[in-house]
Image 1: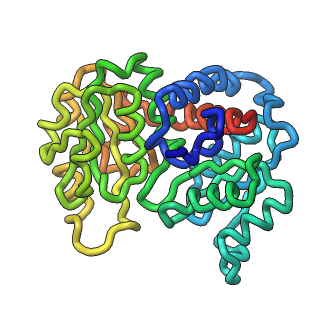
Image 2 (image 1 turned 30 degrees about the vertical axis):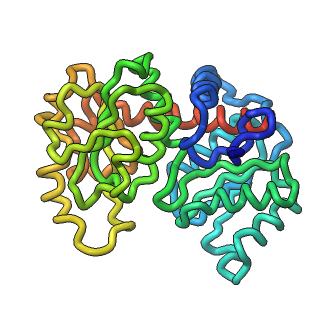
Image 3 (image 1 turned 90 degrees about the vertical axis):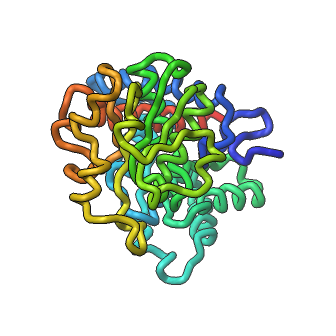
Length: 319
């Protein structure tokens, strides 16, 4: 079956999900990002790769960090960036998502960066572009519902590779609210594709999806048992805004059992790294002593995120 993310030559056409992308493509993105990390060190942080291209940030859902890093990445590649505040735009006046896309295509858009509360919205746009034969316009999923957040998954993989070099000997733990996390799904897809032999998922039963066994991960409901001898700890944000009903006790009770403290981290490997996609709830998912400690690589993740998004955009822009 044709992968809607790849063109007829097997190159990246859209980035919608990490699920189903071949290892070669994931590795190519990480390799392409490598030299882009050095651009931040230069006096003039600009490359002419996407000069003359128009990139539209379509954020139907709030996100400061993701939108800002996409904007910085596009500008560093010399693209023209148009940020649409969709919350106050025509979609609120009754215009459909695809009408909005058609109008922006008429304004010579080259790429859409889409964040949407509904799972599958970026796929819908990509399919519409395919059906209307606009094969030179690309879509990047910047997070859709509970489904996927591929560039976050990629920047996480870049961070792991930067600190650990090789994926094939690692034990990686993903901790917390997996049920509501699009990041976790992207992380699991990427980790297994890149050859991580053991991916663990740790958290309360109420915050675990039912289909985890199909994803090839080991599930733990005990924090210390799950963290024993791991190389990488990936904390997840507690997504209160996506929760309905009594899934959880209070933040303090959650922290007592599931929050990452120096004591709990001590059972991991001494050189284990701690990651978090942000924004962090200190004192809920993670203790400040860990977040600001020597094992945390949370701020480098943000820096690498710009390079990874530059890599994705440059690859799409050249296909």
